[in-house]
Image 1 (cartoon, helix red, strand yellow):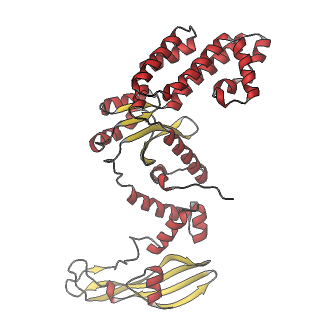
Image 2 (image 1 turned 180 degrees about the vertical axis):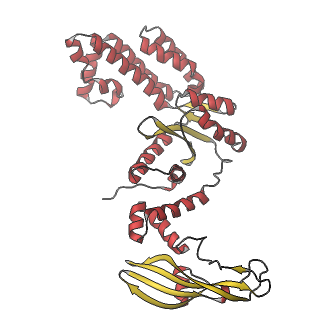
Length: 401
């Protein structure tokens, strides 16, 4: 073992190797400071006398399955010129941390493949130390997230935990990167970021979202020049909910025979008709033939799906107006409610033909967030959780076998 090995293998500079000894499954390297560390922080003098001595232990990257430690002897220094007293700082450490920088880099590399608890167990340290290393790195990476190139964003919320606690995320739809995460899903929660985006995101053209009143009015207030595009999935979910409400209402009102007819047919009504197997189609056809209101609302749902296949904005506008008119004349209150909603938000629907974007990427990111939460069994540190969200676009989940 030599000083050059400590330098090339572990990045340790300014020290001199003295000895190695072994204790259990650990390899312990002993070293001492050299004159390279003598530089007065006040007058830059390179001459000093010793005024006291300390010994510190540092975690080092393991060698194979052996844990490694550095035991460093160093002195308190007294400047010959100005008399200033100081303890030297080491180029391979940061502050008062009990690990060398190569150890932190090893921990960060392992975190790309394993959990915090697994990495902590492998390195022989506490999980809180590994978390702080990761948190410090993420703070540096995401201190400032660039917004000047953003063209399309998606806004959506997800549940943090049970009890109606939510967090809102804003995603760049071109890169899949989370630009902002904040607790809550109200207008006041998202306004500060939208105001920052209005100053920095000069290329922003459109926002994809559900028909949340809070998000809608926040964007209108801060970004009036940006087009709002309502997501297809959430619009279809709106009419699917109307079908389900009608089915439940009829099931409550019908006699026992009628209830048996409707029972177990929920997913037949909600799934796309062409995706059903032949026997399921026959079962659905029989149900719709016997129930006129369900036949009408189901037919209108299938027609609405054609809206996004129109060739241009004018054709889509004509289709939407006709669809809303027919729905209002149907006399089915659940369908009438949907038609009034879509008519009121028609600009956001038609903007799809100017900016063909959806929130599909945001929904996919929400699934990644669920995986992240399950992997960690929840997060108690909100700041760390947000930093992990900002780092989520670098994660790649794959199955083996």
